[in-house]
Length: 69
Image 1 (cartoon, rainbow, N blue to C red):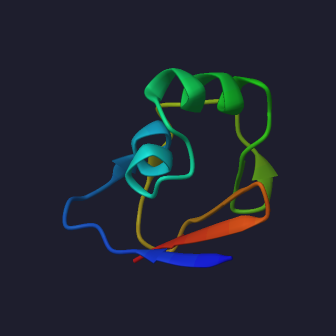
Image 2 (cartoon, one colour):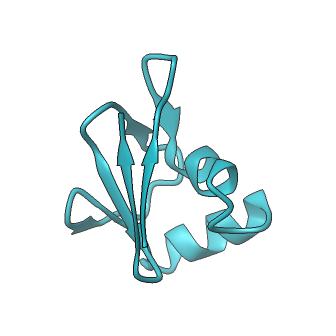
């Protein structure tokens, strides 16, 4: 499934985005999933939960895609 997430700030952190979009239930879940390498940012595996995402970035997890606008 594809989501579009519009942010009103300069950036959003990866773990916060996953919680905001409901792709994980808790921050702890986000941390574990990211550290396990289950998340891709712009096509590359990302293990940094504090990764700053800006408009144009694409996040993938569990077959879901989130495009930052």
